[in-house]
Length: 392
Length: 104
Image (cartoon, rainbow over all chains, first blue to last red; front, top):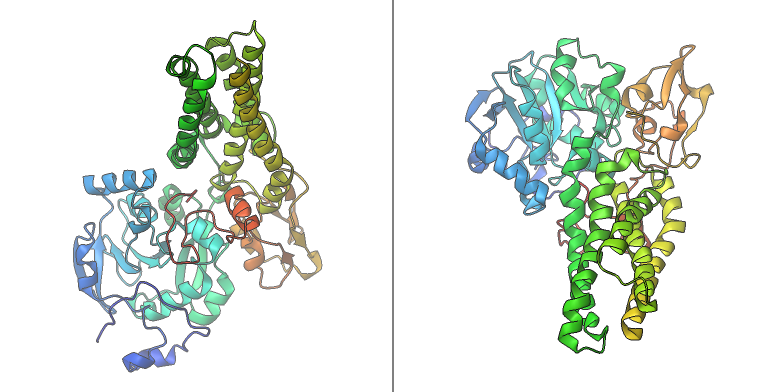
């Protein structure tokens, strides 16, 4: 059978093909599932984690193992830091994990490399088929929210790869966090495959598979433990620093005007503190908030960020040599008491996107009152800081 | 650890119990325990934990559940307010340029 070379971007067909035409070889130009066929084996030659190609009833399928190599680990780290993350995608299609056969389960996942690696690493002694959907390199949950981990994509992949010829059962195990994008009854109607939603966390998959593919209520809950919050810190911190470093430079330049004792002396006197103040605000919002999220008071993330900011503003104002005996010093202290909590609250609010328990209605409500206060607070704090420099 | 909770009384989740057949799909897909089976029908037991992901509504073949699904992401909502489309930084922007920062 001639296999189409995979196209990275394709438009899904509005209506899926009836399964009857799949048995006949369709002319390439008229193939409604073009782009959803199992890719030719040479497509996988660049995928370093593929051990070999194995022959199956649907053609050659790449075989992967559960064990992780050092190259996988380095790639995972790069992806977390944010570099090259858009390039960190797996070729969509069917993969063999271990030595699967006709009775082996079919596990569906996204083509984000971390999702794929996480899945296989959690299944060390399992033989299974992995069906990778094209989610443009985005993880299951985010892609489900956007609809790329979606009903039509899954239907097209199942039909395009001729999954019905690969396994004798008619069951797909879809990660539960993919459910916002997958309408199980539509998939069943179009493909004949029944969707079973697997556990939220891949680590529960062995227990789920051993326990007759039944998830306990605990397996169905999405939590937000410290470890998960901590790995998100670089993704929060780096964009925040990108905005804060230019601000620090501007403040350093302006701090030269803070006293009459010469520009450079004044800049060296006041500049480092200004840079430190910006850094404190950033760390409060982008590091302390993720780490201490359950312990910071308030429901709204902005409120949590406000408290984190106050916690950082206190030692900053009293321990960095601001002269509270004179008015310029008091003005500067007040400026930081405004700026640090405001910036921290804003950064905390941005963390709603990475958190696992916020609703869009709640976020809209929070933004309406919090965003003006945060922007206003930060701007007014900066104005007070400049004023303290000018009167000093 | 106590359960993390976001703002109360804001979600758009609606449930029409008369249409429910008790199939249990909503309970299966909900990641926050919003639903429970009571008297062979689904019941909304913790509406304030709902994150409006839309999984239950999408998987209710009897149209008993309605929710305005969305992603609880401030960056996306702010980008939407600025007319840039509701993107949170982990997808392709309109002009085809990829954005490399974001939550996911």
